Length: 113
Length: 113
Image (cartoon, rainbow over all chains, first blue to last red; front, side, top):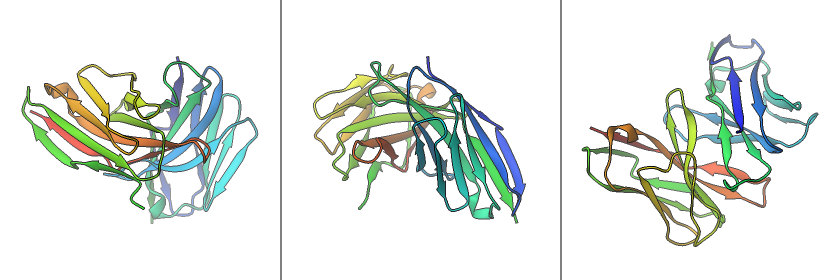
């Protein structure tokens, strides 16, 4: 069974204080690791997809990296508008749940001015 | 471009009542999904439709039925609502042409009393 564990559950940062969120996973044949951002009262918003160990993707102050067992979402010099819940999900190689994503429980990021 | 649209946004039901959540996507995606999100549980797949005319159970299908009305629309029905179905429901669709990314709607908040 695929499993995704995110840590920490909650993270408070001062504006400009860089940090990283962790996503550990076990999956039977990784076919993509996905990062989403979710604002309160909204649906998850797609950020990145990573497919193989060593791959990196960047968008503004966010950088996602992938190893064989975990992914990190690095936030450089965060701003208050980066406050949100960040979700990690994996897709496995096959099985009956076609295209199914297995999600972690998320990390709630709060950036104080 | 509206993306994935869900209705209603909010709904309160009495135990035993029935209702249907509607979902439509305008991105010409083949696959569509219904997830529920509960505190501490993350996003869990209820049902999915790999393509028009097909539907399959996800992780937590009990108490729900779905209909893939056409390529655009995928509805979720609660035949006899129970308090355990109080949750936030998200419809999503999958883009095969852009890294198999899954895009989510804004959510439907359902309370069963």
